[in-house]
Image 1 (cartoon, one colour):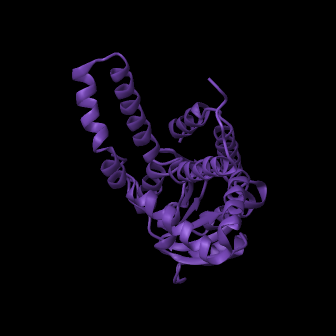
Image 2 (tube, helix red, strand yellow):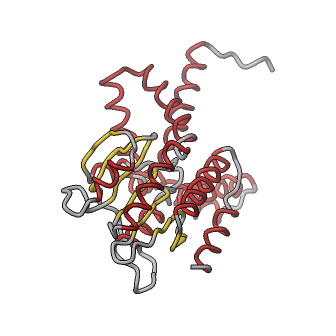
Image 3 (cartoon, one colour):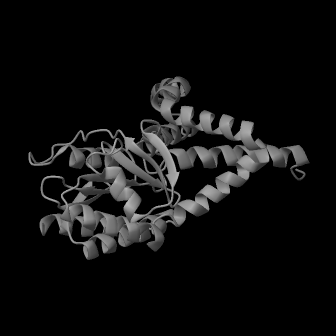
Length: 285
């Protein structure tokens, strides 16, 4: 048997498919869609295995599931597919396909360095000031998962992160104080954004901000800072866990730790320590 012959177009074909798969993975990473995709892969591998061992009944049942898999994927991942097509169309129209590929790489690098001191310090200072004045706040810090649907519900800003700007956004008489502020790429991306409310059972004393913080954490890997308007208490929510009653020092430490955990996870690490530490904060509230 001779060697497999590959032309330049074959290499280009493989690279294009790899880029598409990579970007689709980035869109669903940190969301519930990742678990759904893993389940679909398990079903497909089971079907291939059943066929290899001539298990007629099992392969027939799993084959029926696989045959309608494309329609199921379109239904399940309709929001992710829409985001991908919107991003592809927007970038292709503005800068062309080559720059689009470069942007994918730059976004990955930028995401890994999003939670850094230049971002954390002004958020911590603003949260401390708003806590002392009983000014309610809801700040969402984007990680790897997409927040385009959330940003689309608010007012786009695209500004540097400064304590004074954050305080002005959440000032009680400001037209932008209702809803959440989104931080992405080291900048304030939007304000007055609408977050989904949690579907889990939470304590009755949780207000709308805390419920919204838990809700977005259930659907993404974002880090959320909450300042209570009633008590001034500062909280941090991430991955379905919430640490409440934090001081400014504890808030900075928590944000830096969660940022490091996110980077370790991007490099193939685990996040068990983050969940454990968040649980300890919750017990010591």
